[in-house]
Length: 308
Image 1 (tube, one colour):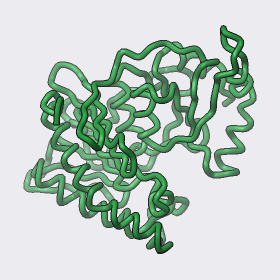
Image 2: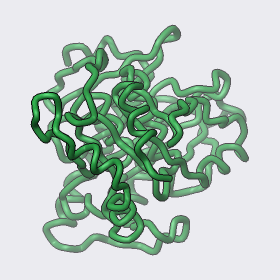
Image 3: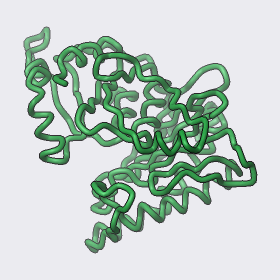
Image 4: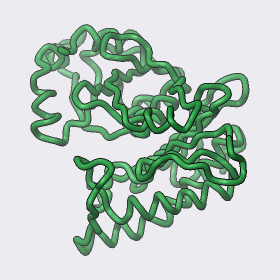
């Protein structure tokens, strides 16, 4: 595919694994949607999250696919405790994986995403990430480090590769700001209480038009939509995102020149402190609120408006 050779090698390897995993799971999810058989399972690790047999199948499939490319790594999937894969007892790469994000919607044939991030324990930073969109034409968001700088790309199902970056500044009154607002009491009600933000978005822009919007988005792909310029910002102020939901999109947005901050406007570091297995297990159990925006100026505007 044109431009694929410009993606650093580790990014290409992860992209190949993600494309194969999505190709394998797509007919299973469509069958679940058409038959109504979601294959739901009890979620003993995260009791408030939907879990299906497809999440578990993707967890196992990724371990096989990733080992074909990388041989040895720490495998830190949402669906199990971190484990070492391969012969190296202390591999440098830690692979954070959310095998099937928004699986509650994926088994209905609506939205389904998958995240893989490679973190170098020696460098203390991500070195590649791929977010796959199972059902849509824009299929992959990729970020990768070439040893000197980070690069971000968008890849379509037709194989077209687009480099991400050079974001334009957009005022809040012209912005689409997204939030994972699907749970009525836990999230939607909390968003409705953000009256300062909602009033600011409703204000007319310089041309006297009401262009500010609130949208729904999901996990890391929401930050990727900001990186691509499809939306302008994403906010999470309620429950917080787990590391496998935030980190891959955080890295893609960083590589595209955007910003991710805490709710006070302080930039979130890319060093997730994953030096040891105990650190990785601890990181997997924490959640983080954030503001993700295409520009630092918009992130600062949102930080001033959000009610803690």
